[in-house]
Image (cartoon, rainbow over all chains, first blue to last red; front, top):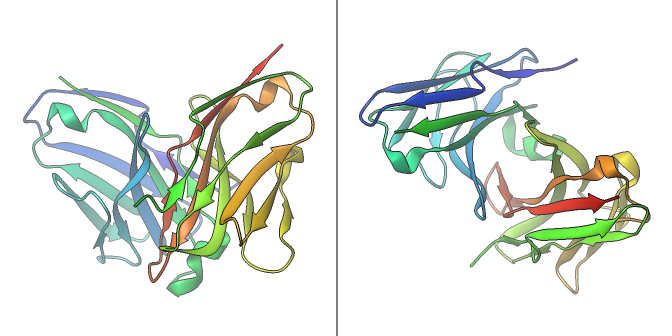
Length: 117
Length: 113
């Protein structure tokens, strides 16, 4: 069974800390995505990546960065965590690459609920 | 303007009753439309998708959706719901010219015994 694994289900961090959220997929997918999910706002795209070392900003990239050194791993980095980054973070992947990837849907991880205090 | 609009944030329905979850899309998205379901404490799972062809699309767990171009809608339906259908449902569409999906704000379906 194909999987997208997010390393932590729950995280509590202090304001100002640097936070790493890790996502690994075992499907050899080219594309990976980070969304945050908030009540009443749905899912909003933070960053995505179409290939190793490639990244593109989504709709709400401010305060975040990403890293994709290997095809199977896509990390979301909060440079200096703030309370307004308390949220559920969802990682997803898809294949194939190119401009038709959306046709095949995304595979999502179970999410990381981050609380910044 | 919102690209994908889910008109109801919460829908309570009795077990074995029919349900319709509404989704409308704007001209800023292409007509590649999806419904995802999120069960408690899980990630999202694809229910069904419309890319082209027949406007009535059947998905998993007895759900179906109908693409209506004139009404710019893609409503999700099930003729008889079960307790296990309690979840949050998201409508999504491809952003025109982009290579990623835009999600609606979600509809929480609660099935009442």
